[in-house]
Image 1: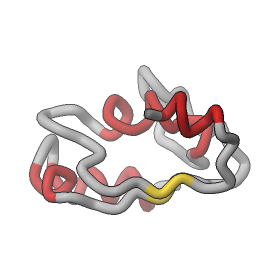
Image 2 (image 1 turned 60 degrees about the vertical axis):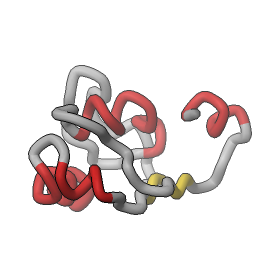
Image 3 (image 1 turned 135 degrees about the vertical axis):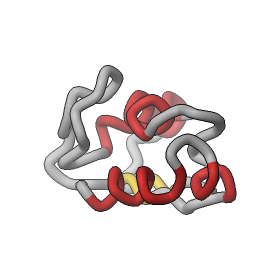
Length: 82
């Protein structure tokens, strides 16, 4: 999906929720696909840090974002660090 989005050269990306499933952390679930739209991203194995001068990634949260992985706090900490 990220490849299709980037082929359209979007100004912003807004997801529809459930950006993660299972025990995946923010870097694996989001960073590996949307690193080019994140600013101030924590460095991880998929997203080595900030790839963008301006944040253009705005995720809506779904039930899996609240409950999967380390839960809502990890997700919010990753988003708020940008």
